[in-house]
Amino acid sequence: MTESRSNELRLELTSRIVSAYLSRNVIAPSELPHLIQQTYGSLGKTSEPTKTPATVEEQRPAVPIKKSVTDDFIVCLEDGKSFKSLKRHLMAKYALTPEQYREKWKLPADY
Image (cartoon, rainbow, N blue to C red; front, side, top):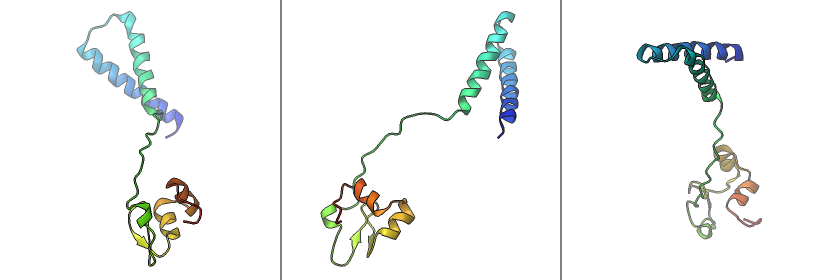
């Protein structure tokens, strides 16, 4: 949405909200500009992206790390699925390189 269209929408919504409020409430005429400004400002805040800190949950491996490597296959710690090689699976499903995967799970370089 363009900025001018966004402002038009904010103005339209402000007028609707203020009109609805005034149809049920009585305010002094001197308070009307403040009500309009407050409503318009509040609508602008709702369109801004929220800046909440991302909560980091400690992820547990799907299987114990010691049991993830066998002679026949390797088990993905993300989802517990078995593969001959994890490289393609990690990139396709989790967008992780092998280095990022090892770093995430604190695995040795020869893992």
